Amino acid sequence: MSPDTQETPPSFKDRTIKTLQGVLARGVPFVKARPVLSAGIAVALLLAVYLLWPSGSGDHGGMAYHQVTRGDFLVSIVEGGTLKAVNETTVRNEVDGTSRIIYIVPEGTIVKKGDLIVELDTEQAEKELNEQMIRYQDDKADFIKAETDVIITQSSVESDIRKAELDVKFAEMDLAKFEQIEREQEIRNAQIEIITAQESLKLAEDRLEWSEKLTEEGFETKSNLDRDKLSVTNQTLGLEKAQSVKEMLTEYDLAKMEAKYKSVLEEAKQELERVKKQGESKVMQIKASYDIEKRKLELSEIKLKQMQDQMAATKMYAPQDGMVVYAINENRYSNESIIEEGATIRQRQAIIKIPDTTAMKVEIKVHESHVNQVSLGQKAFVVLDAMPDARYAGRVSKIAVLPDPQSRYGNTNLKVYSTEILIEDKLPDLKPGASARAEIVIKNLEDVIKVPIQCVTTLKGKQVCYVRGLGGDKPVEVEIGMFNNKFIEIKS
Image (cartoon, rainbow, N blue to C red; front, side, top):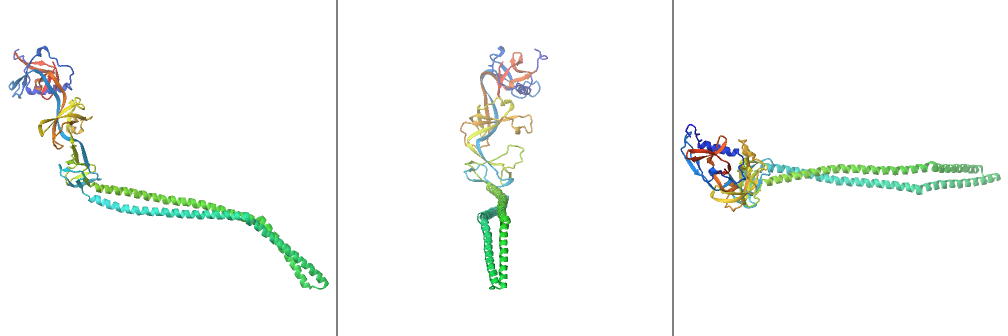
């Protein structure tokens, strides 16, 4: 092939970029079929690999070659992350509003359960507590007065009801006495008056009769005779009066007296009902006032308890043994203050975390192009930056369902998923927050054709490798399989 017609191989830089673009364009590099080599490259091939950037276009300097062989290689995802405790206790600010830290135990301090670790400014809390204490005492006094008023009112109402009930009872007794005794007694008395008048009249008439006989015989004077006549007249009038009294008594007076007794009884009964209803109304009103004062006292007591809790919350104690770690808000755009003495913090803001270092994990971010390759329970290895020569076994324990929103700030196209690797091997005494790298094992490829990932490039929309032959380096189309950050599988 003449130099004029032979196509010049692209530079190393271009091939590397095209390789990555081509691999990503093919999607997730999972291929279930066994690798098959074409007859032309079944044994061994020499592929051109540019290990150094060429100084100019078409420069073949810095070119190296790689002999193709079969072998094993590990397909994995490697991401950097942070070492954290699986379980940790968070101490938060429970004081309403904002508060200022006046004391905090130094970060990294080993504390015992019950040790004072944070103290907040209490000036405002003390002021509010004292004011609420005064309001509580006032509300308690009002409640006691309302309670006493209920007792007094109930006693007064009960007394009024008893008096009204007695009035009804007395009225019933008076009516019964009249109907059973007084009516007959009045009639008897009237009859007695009539009988007495009749007897007196008869005596007067007998005396007049004797006086008339004696006067005719000359033994009695005329004046005595006139006297006896007057006596008969008076006794006659007395009898008529007694008879009239009895008639009025039976016709009018007894009925009037009965009606009066019945009226008194009815009025007493009505008064009893009025007293009961008025008493119920008074008791309801006073109990309503009592309930209001009771509720006010309950609310005041709750408020006082809250204030006391707020005061107690200004001092925070270690909930368990462990090492103090200052809480950090992972939201880069958060306006929360850095935890330190003098800092102002809001309610429910995390201040201190006390991790349980017996179980540790590494939190990493997995790119969306790889997240489908990761599954729960997948084997992984962790390497600590502080101990790069040691590797610790672990497994994938958590994969976020949605992309991490924090990672998209500044780059809306970047989507990564928070993933946790539970470390199963025993770790040395390390503090949470240490940097680490996690390698998630996707697949261990055995006896496959592999080449350095830089050997594959894109030419006219096809993925090719440059093969060294007698006529020079020639592009050969290949089918790629899985890859890691160093090697890529050549399937055919």
